[in-house]
Image (tube, rainbow, N blue to C red):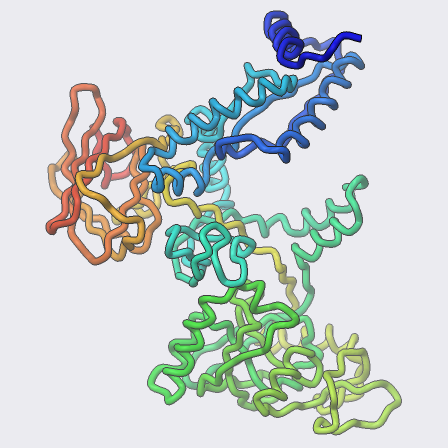
Length: 559
């Protein structure tokens, strides 16, 4: 038996496959089509055995289908944008693009050594302008149809990596990449309105016949559809109202306190000038360092602080204390909860811990009334209403509907549906990501980059004349843009922004204190625009070169 010599045999047959274009997809309408796609690797530098496993399975599938007579499309690409490339560039003093493309070249060579049957003529990289031009076109389409929007929200912030983190990227209160303690910041961010499709996502899970039931259950819980009511409570101290969402309007007569998320915008107004102000602010700061997953864990202790303010129950007229607590999140419901400790496990534990009154409003059918002080735990089963005014004696399931209608009649609430699913925050990157094709203008507001000017390129933008650390923060930046037509300067103010997006580029500046910068455009012979940014201090100067564009915005230079 001849010995197996992999270097000779593999090289021979791989050369033959290349010469005969064995893996190239030729369009042939007479054959049944089969698309085989494995998850694109992140070009981190080297393939490992995990890659080998996935791509071997895909290769076997593609080859089997070809042998069965299918016309197989089996492409390969690179999930090339992301923070690791930028962090590596900072660490090694390289440009993210250079670092990424060098890794792609090396890993492509490894893939070819494996002999995987990819059609390399169809290779893509997500950091290629030809690719992310499509991303930008989709973003503008979402924006045109009201599915992309910008708002301020509390986000997880890693002060070391200077980036926003998803909840899943916060592990034990620390950044999953670098281990730095995570805090919360209020930042203007872009979101995709995926909540518009919550019901469709939920219904279509039934169409996934091949999915494990456990996975579909996880998806249903992630969407988290809840039917209930919104209830409006008056806040006498503010001469204002706060709306809560509840799945249990039948327990509204049993509310003994209200709980707000520490991030709720009303908190600072509620405590202003009160003896509780310092204690509440300290609690708010502490909660910024805890992840949402930790705060809402069943095992996590329930913690809170009284604000010193009260809310008025719309049905009873009673005033109940307003607390803030760790177990209420701003991004679920309205960020405010009506607490009914007699009939909610978390509220019961919180009330017992902080000696807050408990009022029972549901009791088992056919049983006598059990005083609140004798309750060992919250009663969460069905029953009939007690201590609930005109609804006394009514089965609680009936009262769910009746009280919802009663709230609507009095214009203090009504039936509604809420979801645990939140809109998708997409603007997390600092630099090495697809630039968002929007212009921010004081006169015109948020203006889309014209489609004919796409792609807005993510490219090497500056040369530094002195070191700049990534820990510098952008507090307030004044940039003077030349108005081409009238030659009059216009000022643009940006606060806490991850990136300044100009036509053809995305600039990231992080300055420790407020400074004033002058942006001086000069026409270059090659048709591009040179912008020299210099600060009125010892801060390093930056120079960036961006291609000519003609955005439909009065604030931007048009040449």
